[in-house]
Length: 243
Image (cartoon, rainbow, N blue to C red; front, side, top):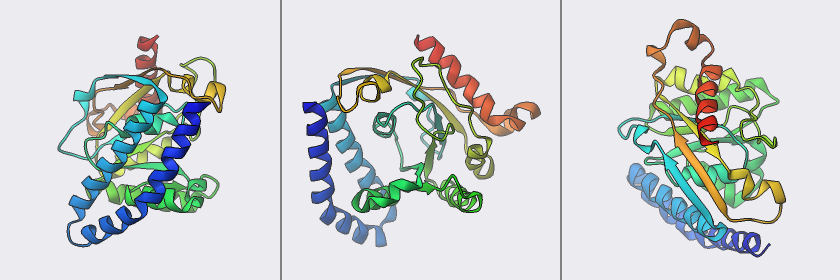
């Protein structure tokens, strides 16, 4: 329980003392946008590393060389824990926005940081609004920002690490319309840290594996037609290897 309290305290202090930092970053971004983007990325990555340290997470990363450094990508992963975001964001080499549920926009300081980091708030119950959000994401990727999405739409609470909900085909539009490669991302062990015994945070080992880039134009017609399930099968194979 002490780890949970320390994490909550650290987050509160970070958001509070981050107010003047956001102001300074806004001023810098008016003239030097990329400089501000990289600065904000590194600041949040530092904060997330502190959280991982407090949590006692031992992270094993596989296949990081598969992430292209010269182009934006769409990270697509399985989702079992809040820690999936914390863990994966620390490894992003370039500005990266995450697609989050729209309820996250209710938290003022947190949502402000998320917007600065190009995160999008997806309304899953309104198709029209959801499409607008995806279009914003496509434009961001065309502008050089990587995106990350968990196509299951929610955290999966199954006992087996291989339990996954079907990936939603619409989530692949970010890659299809932007022309950016997809990076399959398999995470094992993250639910053992928090979700299986909330509110306790228990130290453990998490495996984060990146698959080889998927270039949509190189796929067979049938695989392009079912891109979500094609990507999910790759992630499932990586998860099976983790076992």
